[in-house]
Image (cartoon, rainbow, N blue to C red; front, side, top):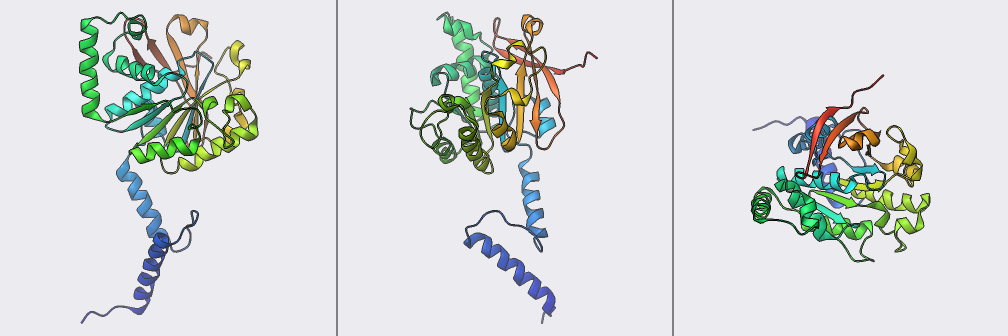
Amino acid sequence: MTVVEPLEMAKAMIEEGRGLAELTTRRGEVIGSGDFNRAMSAYDKRVIEGKGPSLGFDELDQHFFGMRGVTFLMAAPKTYKSWFTINAVAKNITDGRFPYLYSLELPAEESDMRLRCMAANVPYWKYLHSRLDNEDRKKLGHASEIMDENGSYRVEKPQVGERSVNRMVERAINAGADAIFIDQLQYVESPNGESLGALNNTGDYFNVVNDLRNYSDSIPILVVHQFNRSVMSSKEMPEMQQGKGSSAIEEVATLALGLWANKEMRASNVVQLGTLASRNYSYKAWDVDVQLSRGTSFTMIGETQDDE
């Protein structure tokens, strides 16, 4: 006959009761006294899952432990924002994940071909100029086969009226995606159906980015966004406050990264990628080599060296 201590039995019944309540009660997040086992269970799940989806480079993934919550990638117009997003999508496919890219600025076919050219290291300009030769086609075909073997991905440009956070995130989750990439924020529609770029005020930005934050508890999200025109004369990496709707974004972002290059860096095909704001990690910056002429590749050079 097994003898069970009454106090131990009562404790076990209370823990089981809490677990049952979690399954049967709809509520916000609540945790506290007596929930040590639940807290450690959540931690052990994170350990098993490992790093979040890739930010595109091993160095960033090591420092930030992959994508967590909602990440913003900010840069001036025509500063490789979409390309860096494609690079992150490609890395996630290589890692065996299912990234879902909403190409709200470029046609879906162009974003898809950027991805394939990057995977094959075929110059994208040859696609734009309709100059792909037989060797290029072979490389693209082989790279596409490898991508299909490694993971899944989807590139979508939703119709106007289908670009709210709710509609896009729910579609990606239902498709089985591991991470969502949105290029870019100004084309996302507010709850009243207008694009943020047309509204361009902090209140509308907050409504949208707060929805992104809430959904990012379920799936990591990276959003491409722009600095305002004040950065055009910047001699160094712009500040978080120079982004459109910056106060709303700074409040909710788990991580905000900036892309920047001066004239000398552009001439050398180098771009700086660095922290603008981070909820959990120290600030760092890296230099990245951009190759879009002889091939299509983005190569990490290393941490930015302080000239001072």
